[in-house]
Length: 429
Image (cartoon, rainbow, N blue to C red; front, side):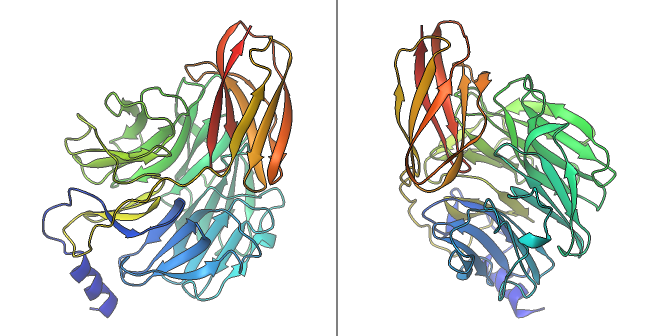
């Protein structure tokens, strides 16, 4: 047995009782959007405070920065990360001209391979690797829907336009080079979350499931085993938290709620077995169940869930830090971090109240250059009107939004960036 395999078994024995709490392995000032852990103890984190890729060779006990923002020519937001075997690593970002990086030596050296991508690809929200040469990428949360594929380890790529089926895409999971899923928001504005399946490598698609809630997005795809799949549903409003799942390898799908919880911006739901599951998102804390979802409980220990990965009887979780759940280990529990300050702010929205059809002015304070989108919703989260995506420079920005003619009442102005969600109540006369 190799030393790395032996070390990992010593750190995470296969026997023993499950932890009652999550064990933090690495703490980050902001969210870790993606990661990969491998059975030999090798792993990588895409961290965003500071902007860097972290590598572990001992199953998560120690991490070292192997790619930093300075090496990438700035501070691109790191959104997705996948490995191809133990040597090839891909990191996708939300930044034009710095969208995709690749390492061929397990993270020791890196190359910006963005020039290899199709011209219209400027962000990668999700990636999926099949075998030793095929990789898919998709995006983006912020107003685009495409799938790209490489069959030569990232040297060349094919672009597949997904806008006939989706207005944006968040995640992708392929089982073989031809069979896989993408998830996001439906192209039909009267629908919400969408799950699309292909068995032709992206040449044709089948809509497997959609929600009827306009504010929904399908966020993360999680596979517990070859029969059981789970997809989280994100919604910015305080409505019942939901996810959809399949117990027959994706042939049929059904939706379930997380008890009576209605925490906004749920982004990740994952079952480690038939009884134990975790759920979290941009809200403080997380939800968990030990009885197969009959009862969900709330913990403030951890926050910011995004990606989860099952490895045997262990679960690794990325959010505001990197944590572990599973058989008892010798790693001491560390205290949770305080929530980070907001990067962007809605400083002022005026006039208030305002008249249907007049111009609304929004003062938006940006912590750095960012895309921003605005939507008008009712109090149930149903979209009334959306404006084209805009760009905000660092500092104070003032946007003028022409309101549509709507019935008098109370609404919410939603502001979305690549990494945050803000909202402001509006009274329309």
